[in-house]
Image 1 (cartoon, rainbow, N blue to C red):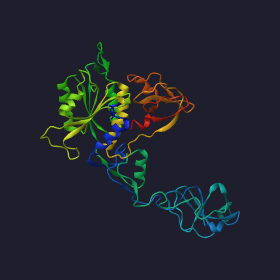
Image 2 (image 1 turned 45 degrees about the vertical axis):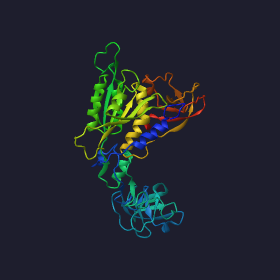
Image 3 (image 1 turned 180 degrees about the vertical axis):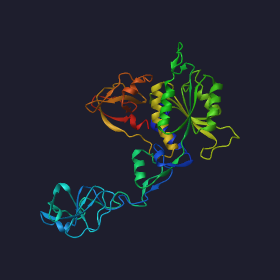
Image 4 (image 1 turned 120 degrees about the vertical axis):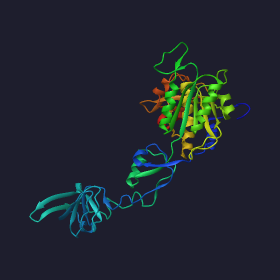
Length: 421
């Protein structure tokens, strides 16, 4: 922070969060089939070579390259080798019909694709005319060409997606050690909040943030303790913080982080622990609280849980502000707690097909959609309460503080798919 701008920049706040994060230590071993979305707790090495043997990458005929030096050679077909079967040693001057994935028979050193061969029968039996002079090794995948036995295929800290699970299975890993699920508590402050299905009294609004934040935490594989809507009093807020801290690694709240008389998060966290951060130069989402809530003494702690305090992150109450601050700050913080090293979302540079003539002193994150010409259109209403902008859009334009945007400018774009998981 500086004297002219008492707010932290987005990068300063993120650096502060990630430096403070202490990865949880508990682990468990689970079936590979059940490991989607989990984080690896230890390096995983291959149990075998992939492919495990020399095999063909084409349907065709296995031959000795030296037997096919002429433009056209006719030879007997000595055998047929489908995938999953082991052929006999190939005799000189013969060919073996072979299918993709099948093991190369001993004696063969090339495969000629079937399009360059002509199969026929005569009184001597099955024969093939080879109309191509192959090089030794042609269309052969060598054993260990993809993976060598004993090599690390998935390092610790990897978030397991479909492709990682397929890779683990391909080398025979039936189970995987993973970081235990992060335990996250949520609650929401505001006497104006009501749940869908309840009567909406005058001045009340439905609590959309409860549904948004729970889904975001589920995307990140967290175990969720939901304490619901908490009355707008200091005592109720402090009591909920104390209960949530006992059994959870992280507490996330929505609302009550401004400086109004009915905003009790800041004094409650300061009374129950400590508050590290308060204002960030981000739009939407300037009020963001980060700190710790002390656990009550005398309660046994789980072996996998950090003792002493639960992390605290207080998000603003406006729906878009809450979503954007989660994506920018909470998501990478949770990933780091899970042991993930690379937590930055993937960004791309795209063309702005809009104008943004008024610069802001804060780093703006504008809801935008990819159009059919490969550029970005801007949602017309960028208010922090307009949740329809996040459904309409494909992601956020990261617009630095003090920056205007002219039509045709190149801008940094953060797709939602890289911010929500």
